[in-house]
Length: 151
Image (tube, rainbow, N blue to C red):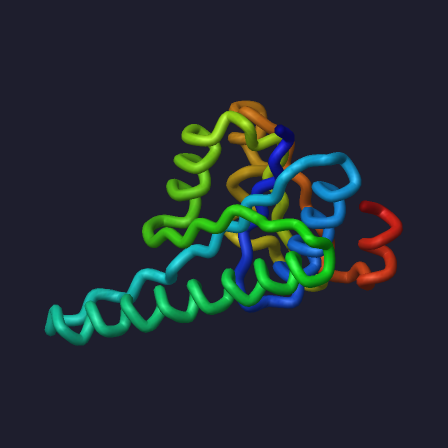
């Protein structure tokens, strides 16, 4: 089954990418896989403090992805797969693509202004030709209505 992998965080552009991917999956008879990345805490001298910071980040990511999945199920009747992982974002996405050959497209959201984030810069740059699937970059300047028309 054609699966759209969308990487989300708490930004508006991530919500637009999720909207596009979920609608595209529904219209093509595909599936949706939501990936939330846990921010790694900067090194802290006291391990307990660092562990607490990382656990709080994981809980926030899990809450974010659970809410997103609930909204998609409510609106479209689709139950997306959910993954929450910590680690280097680029390496985590590369591993996901390698582990899941059913992924037909990587869907990323780009901010309406400013430079692209590290995922877009990496996966659309010199490494784009090595990917097992296309990358879809959803501009943050699009409206929800535009996303609905395009998907």
